[in-house]
Each structure stands twice: as C-alpha cells, then as structure tokens.
Amino acid sequence: MSDKYTLDGKKPVECEDTLTWARWFEKANRHVAQEERDGVRVSTVFLGLDHRFGGDGPPILFETMIFGGPHDQDQDRYSTWEEAEAGHAEMCKRAFPSPQNAGIERTRGECGGGAG
Image (cartoon, helix red, strand yellow):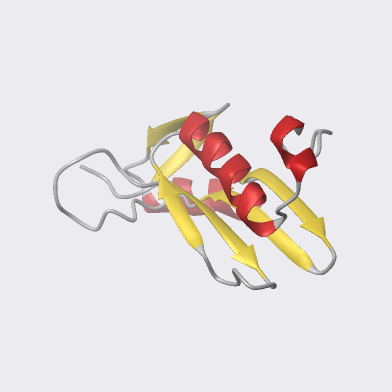
C-alpha cells in the first residue's frame, strides 16, 4: 500500500509511482480553503502523504492549521475532503471568534466564500 496520494477532483487516489506523484504534487492546487483576517490565517491543504504513519484506520491526508494569534500552530488532520472542509470551518470559529462566524459559508479557496 502506498503512502502517496493525488487528488481526482476532491477524491484522494493512491499513487504507487513516486515520479508521477512528485510531478502532480509540484503543480497541483492543494488548497481546500484559506481565510485571513487581522494577521491571522487559517489554511487547509491536501498533504499528499499519509500522515497516519502506520497503524490502523484510513489515511490522514488533509490538514488545517492556524498561523498567528492566540491559537498559532493549532492544527487538525483529516481523511477526506469533506472532513477537511468541516474542520476548516471549526478552526475559523476558533481563530476568528465572533457571532457572525456561525453563518459563514466556506468554499474552496476561502472561508468567506469565493473560489480559488
């Protein structure tokens, strides 16, 4: 079983060939979502490598991290694109606490809407 993955749309696909994976990784848009406000950034990306590092369970392929602010370097990891989107929304609530966050719809590229 490979530890390398590419994306087919939003679906992770195992990739056995290292050169094929490296070529894809070099040019791929791996961002699931990103938001920045007042010098704090929340970024969710497809990692391309299984970060489970052995053990049982599905591969860990996505990561959300906060950069800056009181939650600097907080992170969560996920197995699917859908989990990553939901996790990104939760991290945005943590990084940008305000009543208006409850209704923000997040799409690829930015928490606040907009594609990217």
